[in-house]
Amino acid sequence: MAVEIKIGDRISWVDLIKQDGNLLEIDIDGKTHKVDVMHTADGTFSILADGHSYNIELVPFHQRPKKYTAYTLYQEFDVEVIDAEARYLLNRGGNSLASSDKKIMSPMPGKVVKVFANEGDEVIAGQTLVVISAMKMESEYKAPMDGKVKKVSVKEGDTIEGNQILVELE
Image (cartoon, rainbow, N blue to C red; front, side, top):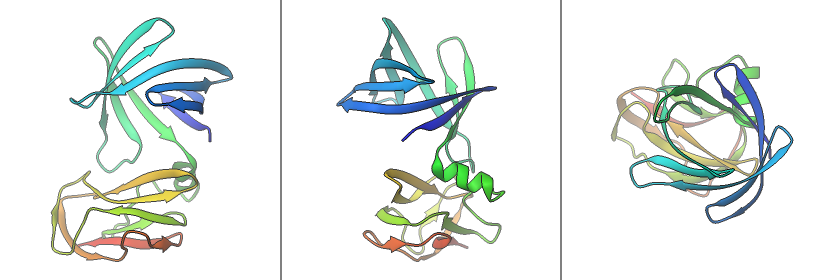
């Protein structure tokens, strides 16, 4: 499934063709590339592509799912992944997975893969609370702010509907 990757003002279509461990064959705007991608222990990505080596650190924006600042040795870039979930939210006019009433909701149907939150837990902004599998992709739903978990409405293995409440914060 192709996704749009926006880096600054440039938008590219990226599609994973094949994966064998760290070795990926990807299509970027109609051109096939073979790359070796490794997520290192310190949280950076080591990428070998077309005879060049790159080290990139991705730092997520708070309250902005799938938006990052990418740091290389000499430059920094704003990066946004626009997949089916993000496109759905943009089309609904939303820019966040959390509503103003502190409810974290799934924008589309799917299956709960993992629940990291329990009622009464103290959470910090950006902390992953639930992972959902939808449309052959896994999406993390994160706390939009620091707070306390009031209610967890799902458990691992649950099938969920679009706009279903996953977690409520106090």
